[in-house]
Image 1 (tube, rainbow, N blue to C red):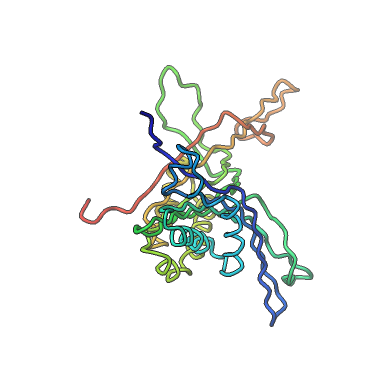
Image 2 (tube, rainbow, N blue to C red; image 1 turned 90 degrees about the vertical axis):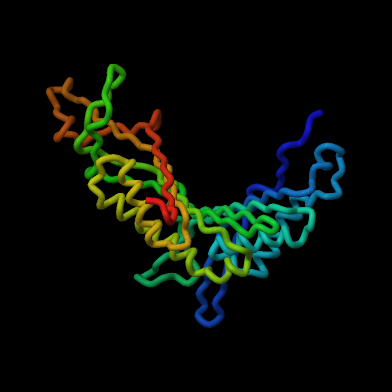
Length: 301
């Protein structure tokens, strides 16, 4: 007999925008999010017997996000994701797990005549802040925070040599090269006992995001990189040191390749090695380097 071994459903791509209006200063702040909610629980019969009585409609999930956004702060996103997830497992006794993913889109305040404008913003890139919170009945709330789509490039200060060579190897060694990648960085928080504990550490979430972003950018720029592997490990190590409630940090960094163009065929024009100035950006195939660094367990060397 077949059995249902996995069941989860919800609402994806919930677009939400909230404005905070400071009546005293006249300054407004804005937050734009894309939310995904997925629920698990006693919902098997909706699949196996066409019984929808246990289904919390996906439209209900969407409307719930809007209502909770009106009633609660939406920043930091770790807190709002926890509020939404906790609502579902507390409101519906047959729902035991709620997965909430929030993507926060960038809106940066404009400056006019050298002063921050009170209500105008611009999008200065596709970088996003991401949060995944999972509220489990009787087990607390787990949260993963992250940065995605942060595109970076440095025109020198990167090398790659001394790697294994055999009869399949054609790649030449490089002592100086362009390094570019689209950063995907995430950090896993310790498991929180519930919403109250999440609320008690709210300042830690923005602090960790700011530290992770700063560490990523500054290490990328200043490290004389012998490899992407070594540079990302240094980033992880620093983030763990900066955020004491974080248990693990991971990076996924795809190489954005820029290849030298040999122009010697045209009047012996030199454009390789130390003379390289014009490059051809490549889309694929590309290297992809990933790692996860965790805290060393106590008692282990």
